[in-house]
Amino acid sequence: MCGIHELTEKDLQPLTFTPAYLDKIKGMRFFDPHVHMTSRTTDDYQAMADAGVVALIEPAFWLGQPRTGIDTFRDYFNSLLGWERFRASQFGIKHYCTIGLNSKEANNEALAEAVMEIMPQFIYKEGVVGVGEIGFDDQTPLEEKYYRAQLELAKEAGLPVQIHTPHRDKKKGTQRSMDIAIEHGLPPHMVIVDHNNEETVKEVLDRGFWAAFTIYPFTKMGNERMVEVVKQYGSERIMVNSAADWGISDPLAVPKTAALMHESGIDLNDIHLVTYVNAVKAFAQSGQINEADFDIAGNIDQSEKFNGSTVLRGGQQPRINKNTTIIR
Amino acid sequence: MAQYVYDRQKMSEGLTAIIAGNSSEAAREWLQQRLEKAASIPQFNQTFTAIPRFTGKNMITVSPEQAAVLHQLVPGFFVHGWTLDRLIRVWWLLQLDAADKTAYLDTVEKLFLSAEMNELAALYSALPLLAYPEAWIFRTAEGVRSNIGVVQEAIMLQNPYPARYLDEPAWNQLVMKAIFTDKPLHLISGLDQRSNAALAAILTDFAHERWAAGRKVSPMQWRLLTAFVTDDNMADLTRVWHSADQVEKAAAALVFSGTSYGPAKTLLASDPALTAEIQSGALSWDVIAAKLTRN
Image (cartoon, rainbow over all chains, first blue to last red):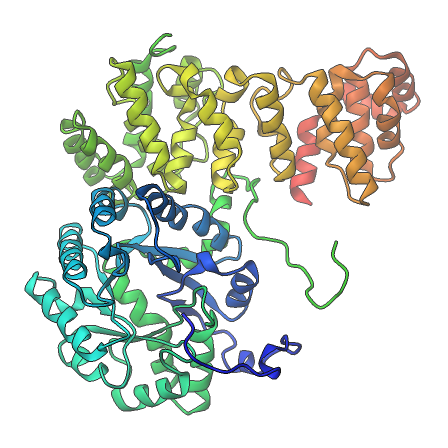
């Protein structure tokens, strides 16, 4: 979601050079544990793959405007498990998702009830690595009701929870989210608290939760601030994501932040932890992440072999040259 | 409409034997436990979804004897190259009570509606084994419209259901979609038997479009003209025959060898070397398919 900002002509010019930061992170692998690919283009997938993103998690969220019926919710969940996953595989990226009723739409009680009814059908699906993103937006009683109900679902299924913390009244909202999770008997190591900032991070880490940071221009963290956070708090239980969506956001936020950390003298091992390892560890508690799959993500369809010979493609997309005016 | 058009019990046993040889004891125990609750539809559905969590997704191995048993029960039914979770999901579908037709159709249709892509692949792979086979014709045509590779392949390749049940327009749509999405045509069950004049005409139109755009035409597609060589398409086949690409020429030769259309026979006779290769079996559609896969 974009905030208040001014664009200049310069900001609108297309990129015409290979960015230097790519050199700094050559050979590194990244895991973006929060990115809404449904609202991104194939160019983004290509750029992410080129920058070293090998796997990602797409949390279920709202779509920029409220849905009016349960069928569109079902289709949305289905698309996260089907078409979007296949689309990612065409670029060699392993796509996981979390399934949940987001806080905004929890405020439509009739719809929320219907979503809760279909949730159990979806959270046991292959590649569902958590219940998310759930939590508070306006911090209304209905948001609380469905947050609590979904914590119970997650507990029963043994899945991690991915918590969206509110933009407004953030600090209190974050505290309350953690209190309620504890109240429902979820151990902190099964809860990833998202969209942290300098004001929330200390308590989240002190209480034993995972602290995720969203690098998102204007409204959330910038990556220079992120560098300072890692310098101060280290790399334990901290992870970085892009939360890129249909707003002005950056699907390369994770690799770019890694490059900036490298440039700022942060140890390569710490960079690896906050841009890959920690997120894999946190969500692998679902039992649904196998790192070996990252290497064969581009070959999902090629795993369907006939008599031992790989005959199937439908996998990797052909690369097109973007720097020419000719389209063939 | 008949419930099962083959011996369901024997098929279930045949699949069980393959599962036994490919799964862990823990997985088989879990399945046994789940089987006791399978009469409850929500439990049945949850098991269908949860299968890979408990069985893993290894590629299965199937002995020729085991494959022969399946083939004998349902001609053309083929599990080679499947992963264990797909095999078990297909077997699981056979455990659903089909006595009440309405309830059965409703349960399976709902599985389709909330399936992720590997579940879809399993469901479409199970088409030849589902009860009330005529009930899945619309669903199959709908599946052909999928843009997800693994789902398309489950329907199109080595699956005997479409050739047996789809009507001509839906069949032609399947073949054209397979061509558009670069599938190995020789793995489509019933490809030659279901070729037809309408499809032959669509294919020549399609070739004209590709040539006009400066693009290549897959040599494999000419195979579908074999029984329909006429004055109308001989010029196109002649163009393929004169191609500088040896694989294209070989494809034209195979078409000519299979037709009784005189001018085609004459052209083929002008190349005794190719004619001899076809007669000896050194050149066949499978040979062409293998060459194309290598490229």
